[in-house]
Length: 352
Image (cartoon, rainbow, N blue to C red):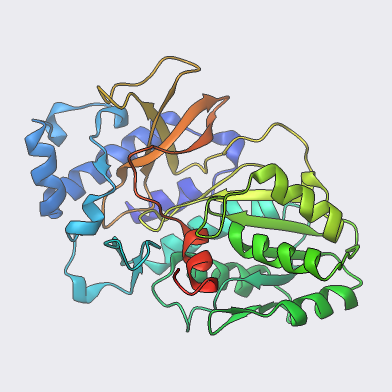
């Protein structure tokens, strides 16, 4: 199954194979039902088992809150190579996602990142606005940044958050001195704080053409709420990075795969494209049945790279179908705040 999954992940995005995805999803469901006691109990409560379904769309998605209260695992905890925690505040219970296979997780990260953030470059200088992995060993975003930096970053690539402090002056100096395109990567609110500082100091730069920004997380924080449009306007006004080179990543600590809303350099309408190993259903909050085309519903992701936990996850996020993917519309009103941006905003404001 692992080799089949690796081949699926490596497929070009225009060669998605529904039959192959369905076969692998059902294989994985049989494995997870048999080895994940938490998930098996959930499936049994719905009278669903591997013998009762023939389509991945019938696999029951486990509510994401289960990761807070149970170990959603197919193997013993002591065999995990990493454990990722959700980025809730200290006032919230944090979820735990145990990772057992670095190879699958890395391939899932690299292939889709390359397609969307660096389609035109082999390597690029990366300026990363997250803590390094040694300071945030349980942060899936820090792990992701380390993976892409290792495989796609130049030797000059570095982190600009150390000891929970944004090193704005060093970042400004390095941006001012660069004469080649750069990639700025970080959580959405790390850029909010950086842009706030630039505005207060009346600093405006013009980065080399084809420089790009990839942000991840939401736009609501402890200090205030901003819009994606505001963030990308600031990127253009303060750095000279045009909107077609601004890419938003959507991911979750409970998942191994990611979505991106744009390919760098393209100006097509924004919607979150899925890699070959990932599908999304949009479900009615009341019935959990698929909504009609154009209607808003709760996102359920089916991530086959989640090989040793659970592939089907019911989120607390809202979306609407767009082409082959979805437009993200924010959190359900009753859902607790979470996200990489919230963690950084909390840190930079002393947990107020």
